Length: 300
Image (cartoon, rainbow, N blue to C red; front, top):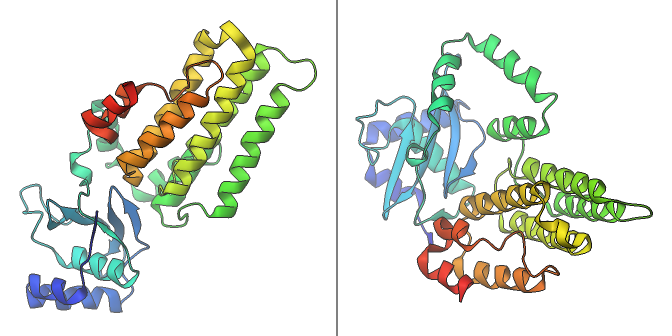
């Protein structure tokens, strides 16, 4: 469900001084590119000196505007918008961003304790040293590179041409794996490369078109498994299917896929699988996306 909001509603909901401060931030060009995250938007807002940037998330939660900003402490009321949050909101409105009625704030996302520990360590490093460390790894890891560029606002959601190129790569990998003299290793290698392409794609803002591209890849992987017979149950092939399904579930959540059409597409993919079981045929994995009723529809 999409919520309609305008700038006048925002002006009336915040203190005039905060609104003027937000306008000053925009006039000074302090706002970075906005990126859609969990049904809301995220952007970096720089301080007057430009040395510090606050990350700001804004979205609609339980029919109320909500925000999370690095400038505030954990006790801050999320419905009290700071100047940074107002600046991000006004920019999103000017860009015609479609606000979801059930956005998910970043703070509610569960973080692995080890990830949190290392994040706390990283926060102690000088900015330049941390930037070089990330860059050194990003040049050898396509997934990290894509995520870095997306976080920086330099990569938007994939275009139709880019998605068409991904589908061509998937088709080419699938065809090459079963051309001439081929064996199970060739199929497994192709599957791993397909998963890598999809994981790179998943680092960018999620859209329905991206989701459909992953579903296309799932169909191609299911078709490959139809050629390997009983070996489809081998551990390597199971791991590839699980990784592909994880990408699909993640994009379903991030794009806030509509349950009913998603169920229809999943049923069609499962029915078309030549082995009688699709890599996406794990209904319980889709519980966070579809809810109990949607999962029941997949299992009936």
